[in-house]
Each structure stands twice: as C-alpha cells, then as structure tokens.
Amino acid sequence: MNSSVFSFLSDFVFLLLLFSQIPSSLSNDDLFTACKKEFVCGNISAGFPFLGTGRPSACGIPELELMCNENNITTMNINQVAYRVLEINREFKTLRIAREDYLAGLCQPQFANSTFNPKILEPVEGNINYTLIYGCEDASANMPGRRSFSCKIKDVDGQSGYIKEGENGPGECNGSVIVPVSITDSITEMNTSDLEEQLKKGFEVRWKVDMDLCWECASSSGVCGFDNVTNQATCYYPGMHSPPEISL
Ligand SMILES: *[C@@H]1O[C@H](CO)[C@@H](O)[C@H](O)[C@H]1NC(C)=O
Ligand SMILES: *[C@@H]1O[C@H](CO)[C@@H](O)[C@H](O)[C@H]1NC(C)=O
Ligand SMILES: *[C@@H]1O[C@H](CO)[C@@H](O)[C@H](O)[C@H]1NC(C)=O
Ligand SMILES: *[C@@H]1O[C@H](CO)[C@@H](O)[C@H](O)[C@H]1NC(C)=O
Ligand SMILES: *[C@@H]1O[C@H](CO)[C@@H](O)[C@H](O)[C@H]1NC(C)=O
Ligand SMILES: *[C@@H]1O[C@H](CO)[C@@H](O)[C@H](O)[C@H]1NC(C)=O
Ligand SMILES: *[C@@H]1O[C@H](CO)[C@@H](O)[C@H](O)[C@H]1NC(C)=O
Image 1 (cartoon, protein in one colour):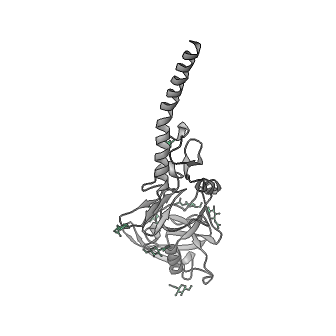
Image 2 (image 1 turned 90 degrees about the horizontal axis):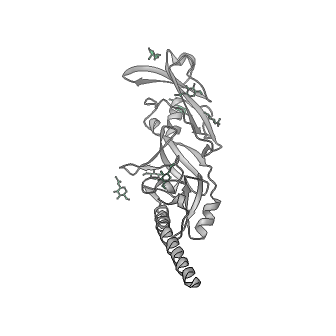
C-alpha cells in the first residue's frame, strides 16, 4: 500500500516534470534553428554576435543589428549614426563600415559624431579621427590650402567649411562632425577630395565580444546566441532543454 502511493506520486512528479519541460525544450530548439540561420544580404553574411533580418534578438547583441535594404545593401545604426556595412571579417572580428551621409560627398552631413560603445566596438589601429566643420564665416581663412569646401546645406548655398585632423569642436562655426578615417600610406595630409574618397571606403571597427565560448559551442554542435537576462553569450543546442529565462 505504501509502495503504490509512492509509485503513484513518483509517476505524478514524472508527468509534472515532463509537461513543464516540453515547452522549453521546443523553444530552445526554435532558438537553435533561428540562430543557426545566418544573416545574408548581397555579399555580406554574418552569424553571432549579429542579429537582424531573420535573426531574432536572442541570436546576437542588441547593438549589433544588421539591416538589409531592397538593393541588398547592408546597413546598421551605431549610436544613432547610419552606416553601410562593406565587409565583415569573422577571423579578425572586424567590420568595415562607411557613414551613409558621406557616401554622397561632404555636403549632406548627419550632424552626429561617430561614437562607439567601448564595451562592444572599438576602432582598429590604423584609423585617425578627422573633424568636418560646417557653417563658417570664411573657412578658407581658417584653413588655407585645399582643406576647405563649400556646400549647399538646407537650401543655403555657398556655406563654407573645412576639415581638420583630430577631434575638434565647431569653434566659431556652426557645427562639427568627428569621423574615423583609415590611414593610407600614400596620403600625408588629406585635402577634401582625399577625405571624400576615404570616407567612401570606410573604416574598420572590431567587435569586442569573446568568441571562445562560441567556438566551443559550435564544436559541440550547438549555436551561439545571446541571453538578454544575463547579458552574456549562451549556447543553444538542437532539441535540448533550456533554462526558463531563454525560452520564448
Ligand atoms: C561586395 O559587392 C560589392 C558590389 O556589389 C563590391 O563593391 C564589394 O567589393 C564586394 N565585397 C566583397 C567583400 O566581395
Ligand atoms: C537581392 O538578393 C536576392 C537573393 O540573392 C535576389 O533574389 C534579389 O534579386 C536581389 N535583389 C536585388 C535588387 O539585387
Ligand atoms: C577618435 O575620437 C574618439 C572620441 O570621439 C576617441 O574615443 C578615439 O580614441 C579617437 N581615435 C583616435 C585614433 O584618436
Ligand atoms: C550659423 O547658424 C545661424 C543660426 O542658424 C545662422 O544665422 C548663421 O548664418 C549661420 N552661420 C553661417 C556662417 O552659416
Ligand atoms: C562632436 O564632438 C565635438 C567635440 O567633442 C563637439 O564639440 C561637437 O559638438 C560634437 N558634434 C555633434 C554634432 O554632436
Ligand atoms: C588632393 O590631393 C591629392 C594627393 O593626395 C591630389 O592628387 C589631388 O589632386 C588633390 N585634390 C585637390 C582638389 O587638390
Ligand atoms: C529578452 O528576450 C526575450 C525573447 O527571447 C524577449 O521576449 C524579451 O522581451 C527580452 N527582454 C529584454 C529586456 O530585451
């Protein structure tokens, strides 16, 4: 009698366990399937730590969201600045990005400095900062040589500006934008057309996400994702139970 009560109870507990684990098991499987899928857009492809366009938020770091536009061009926003993604190098953990506003020359600036969350992205060695300064009374007086330019901004023609190495404020002019630029050996002191060219080629930033866990995860046939509760990389396995916090 005692033993049959025990047996009934243990079956009951077993069933409880079974039912409480089925949903999370399915959801981890879904996460595995979702995060196994790569981001693909034109000739750019990416896995962890990126998300976006088919990769849900559980698959990557919130700040590293990629978008694919109708022309198969990859873009991303970093600290409110729009960039085009030109290349992703998984081995070196680098992205080559170019500011969207400067792809069409210097005259349609988005007035925001290029800044990066140092925990997530860092500019690589081999970049220097340049400042583009807009809305000056007479830029060529400030900056002689070929480092001043003239723009039509907000329907005002002939607004003059200039470029200057380093991180600068607008001074007596109306606005300034700081942007990293790849150093090229061939150019010692950039003029405006050199800078225009360099801005189109973009610059590199490195993602500072530790990938070791992900290599381990992959070698045990899992796929890396991002646990937004612990704020850490996590591993999803096909058809295995998941802790409740990563279930959808
Ligand atoms: C990707 O394609 C674009 C043109 O669509 C080309 O300019 C670029 O060099 C290609 N990038 C790579 C890494 O192949
Ligand atoms: C974008 O890429 C997809 C998949 O490769 C292709 O089917 C589509 O035609 C491309 N669109 C454009 C505008 O190139
Ligand atoms: C460029 O400026 C940013 C701040 O605006 C700074 O964090 C970064 O270190 C600078 N890069 C270089 C190469 O001086
Ligand atoms: C700077 O901005 C102010 C206010 O918008 C404007 O009145 C002034 O003309 C601008 N200066 C130049 C040099 O563009
Ligand atoms: C960019 O940074 C400089 C120096 O820190 C600052 O003076 C300037 O106002 C900033 N520009 C914008 C658009 O925020
Ligand atoms: C800018 O400098 C490059 C060399 O760095 C030169 O070939 C080019 O003619 C210059 N452009 C202007 C507008 O001065
Ligand atoms: C964490 O991710 C889950 C889905 O995986 C989502 O429902 C939830 O809103 C996310 N929480 C935060 C704080 O982003």
